Amino acid sequence: MNKNIPGWAQYRNPDQGHAFQLTHRSVGAGDPVLLIHGFGASSYSWRYVIEPLAQQYRVITLDLKGFGDSPKPRDDAYSVYEQARLVRNFILENNLKRLHIVGHSYGGGVALVTSIYLSASHPGLQKSLVLIDSMAYPQALPDFIKILATPVLGPLVTYGLPDAFQVKNLLQKVYFDDALIPQDAIDHYATDLGKPGAKYALLATARQILPPDLQQFVKNYARLAVPTLIVWGKEDEIVPLAIGKRLHDTLPNSELVILDAVGHAVQEEKPSLLLPYLLHFLAIESLASRVFR
Image (cartoon, rainbow, N blue to C red; front, top):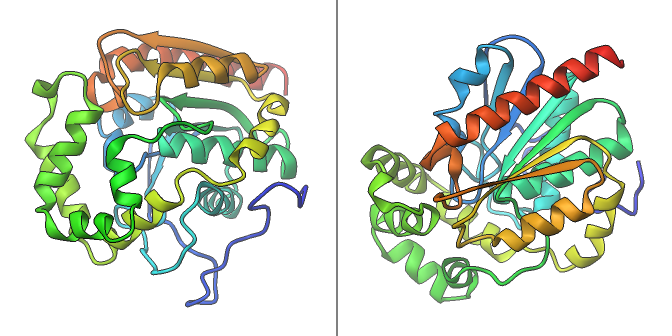
């Protein structure tokens, strides 16, 4: 693998001395579809799409380092590069082949970097990529990320305000229609935020969310040939549509779908809009990989 690509080496947990284990779940059978959640979320964010996908695929959800039920060590390795190394290692350790990767938001950035790592080390293993309102380029950060990334103020807010209040405030920025925010989601994410180490991980991730060398790293995008579906909520207030259009212009084998009247997380706000495009794309790429293998 190209050692000039950030994060090429396997990440080892310095406290445990062995490969870092991400919490994951698997349901269904068929070609594997790996779902990677976004910032502040967990595999719970895919709850509406898991069952429809599992009718035809082996659906694997994982919690990124620091989120959901995965470990939350008090270290400084929470960048997309570190997360992508862990995801890449998970893929290789579990011998996932004919793989489709789906990532949302921060998890989309992780999925994109993971795909670049795989294309360099194991070309042909991954069959497709889906990016939903994904981080990809240097951008103006939303106010809540700026606050979390600010010394003193970030910890003051995160440790001082009630977990449910923080989660509801964030979801109101994620959703276009606040009336669609379910109380169950607020309760679930608030419980996650209350887990030991979760607030530390949230703050550490916010501080590292845009790597300082990202402008250099994006030069790898134009060489990523894996078929890619880019899905964007037209009303996204967190990662602007301009990012999605730029990705589409840069990735050589991509298509862009723009969804009206939905915000940053279509898989949670309006999964019925996402599923037809997602299922159609995966079906085509699964068939193509079998015909031309």
